[in-house]
Image (tube, rainbow, N blue to C red; front, side, top):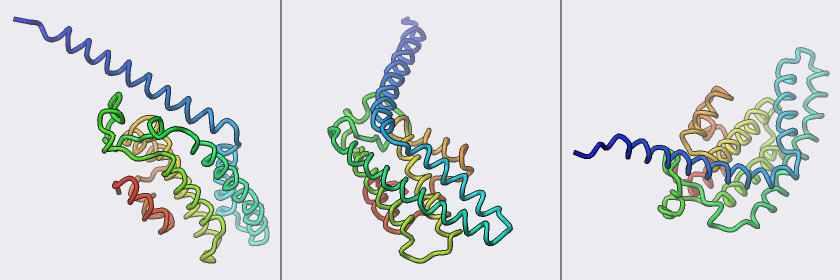
Length: 203
């Protein structure tokens, strides 16, 4: 009788080696484009600013913080749009994102029908961020910050999904921001939610 344990161990090892290589390739690909901008730094500035403004008891001081954040939000949106335009130059094959819940090596090549294009997803996020920052709906600063944060969280989720898997992205969103993917999707702008669902087919 053939001992299947060594074969199972070998198959498992091969799976994780290929999965790690694919993850590294995707992280490097995304990083090559992000490193040209200060998007992560601006995101941190905006997020910290929201917390300061929401916790500031003095109305005058609170208003000053909101005005300061307006400029940072605009800069963040401008840089993200430039990043999206730069990333759009990549080929379709290397920007596919698997819709499968877990990461499987070469899933985007084996099941291309179960993928979506990261370039299109990033364009949706860029539009959503710009809409939220422009505050065309004349929301209160608090409501605007809530929507802007949700747009940023969903964008981060998409990037983690591309680099790893949807399951990993869901877990990181919950661990970092104490919120679920469904909650974030419900909090983004209506245009973002509609376009995102049409692209990914996943709520």
